[in-house]
Image 1 (spheres, rainbow, N blue to C red):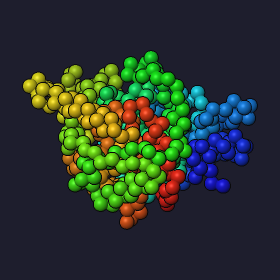
Image 2: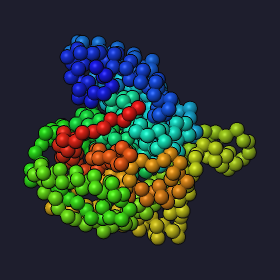
Image 3: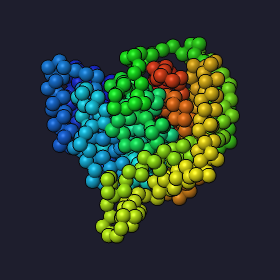
Image 4: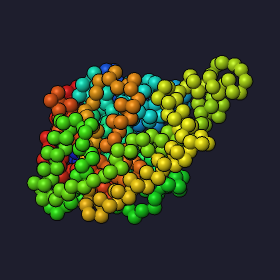
Length: 483
């Protein structure tokens, strides 16, 4: 049996039945990482020794009957989520040697369940990008085609899951950074409702948009992981104190009578024909299950990317101002006065994409430009929320493509920021409106590259979109990456 091909749920069953042990499955994943990750480059840091120790500890608890849903399960963690004693670089030279003295709350919750952390995955620098090619250390490739990108910014996590280098992974999503790489790498990724998972210990990009979430092989696995990491945290004032629930409760739900919205703007010009056909075929599959398809409109979509990049860049410029080489981050060897030191430290520590967004954010917040840019973007944020509320007044779920196309070549769009930004058109409104969404594979193009569809849910209704995604997955034959 190849244990690396099993889902989290299947691994749990096998561990509980003593079909294999946590040290055995951990060793299997570590062996695959050694064989494959040299070409894939999904991990920045592999914590082999710590993983084997954690696996042995987890097995002792499993043998004694002290079992949690994720006990002994090998997971990977995106490298912007703080891990006590293990480097957290954000794929940036600015934090190349940063070792956090504490765990993120999400990491604390996973450790409490006895997970095995295999390592920290690569990402776009400070989570700014959609390709993982802005990483200062590991420019991750797509497990379906090593000449293509895995998406981003959680590309390392998605590629590691797709290549079977971990059972599942944590990522973060600011404008599609879980869902888009999940689509490109042929796996399932969940962006929870803003406030569902504590952001404490997540290195901030855009604080009103960032959210931690799981990437896994199935929607049910995503629900199992969300069960573990969700909940109120007094360290994070934006986390919500919600009643406890099981996000896998609707797995196996009937789709009969479920109203699925199909917003025309998400299927218009700019969406590849292969993508449009695959997602609409998925809509027909839901219809065959008894769901009702409802045509709707979202007029503000054409302005969404501009609004998102103004809001996100403005918040990024504020959050990243702390990295000056004195209080935080890389410190230049160049000597000089205070201003010269800061300039040199930031010039050396930040990559081009991060610098671009800091400049854009500072510009948008400048006196004289604030109302014209940032103010209008915030007004559009409210308009987008209103349009979603109107759609959810008559529908249960919204179905869209996850990305306009499939994964592109590693050097194809990297030097065209406008094209890169426009590729986020299908995902950014979810973050702007603080909604939950899940991406799962619904087809493949003519070259075998995965195509993802997204199910968007009402606030706090992750269970419904997990259940609906699982319903589709049960009847869809996923083609694994050949790596």
